[in-house]
Every structure is written in structure tokens, then in C-alpha cells.
Image (cartoon, rainbow, N blue to C red; front, side, top):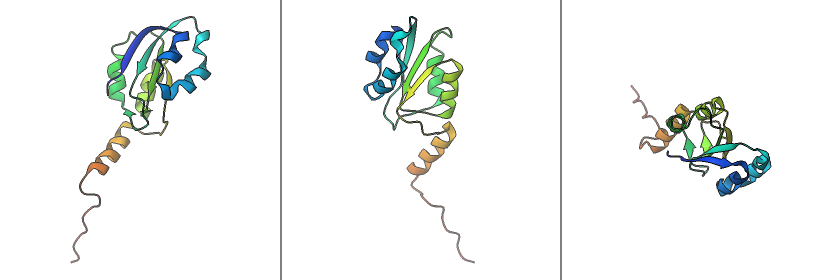
Length: 124
């Protein structure tokens, strides 16, 4: 899942760059009071968009470690949240359902599987 990276964004411009579904949360943070610049990481922001740690790791590898980060996304997995918090990112998400990378993958594969229930064992 690709993310857009916006570098050198002044605090007063973050609300304008924030996805519409998350602007209400961003306004409450009052970034305009910060004098520093930020790097925005904008992942897909619908609640159905689960952001896995691999995608976050990939994006973080492209951003210098000294940057102040703000991340936007649909639903970050617990592992992806940990990676972002490790870098000190401020995180805004549409959903905060506590998926893990593995847990979401298992559920997604079960739903997509043509076999919904295990076959019954024959009576012997």
C-alpha cells in the first residue's frame, strides 16, 4: 500500500494537506502553534484500508530519521503503529481496530477462501 510523502510542511499547512476524513482530528491538535516543519505520510484513508507494518517500514526507510512525522491512514496494524511511534510520529487514523499484521491476514484469507467451514469427518 503506497503512501504519499510531503516534506517540509509548515504546521499551519497541515490541516490543508490532511485527508478530509481526518481534518477534524488534526484541527484539535493545533499544529499551527508549532514553528518547526513536518513530513506528512499519507496512506489510503478509508476505514477498509489496513496499513501493514511492511508498508510503513518501506515509507520510513525513505524519510530521514531526524524528520518530525505526521501519519494519516485508514487503520494501522499494531505493528505499524509501533514503527511509527518508535520514530515519534503523530498518528491520525480513521479506525483504531486493534489488528495485528498476522491477525488481519488470517481473517482476510479465511473470508476469501472458497471453503468456509472445515469438512465434516465421515462417521465410521
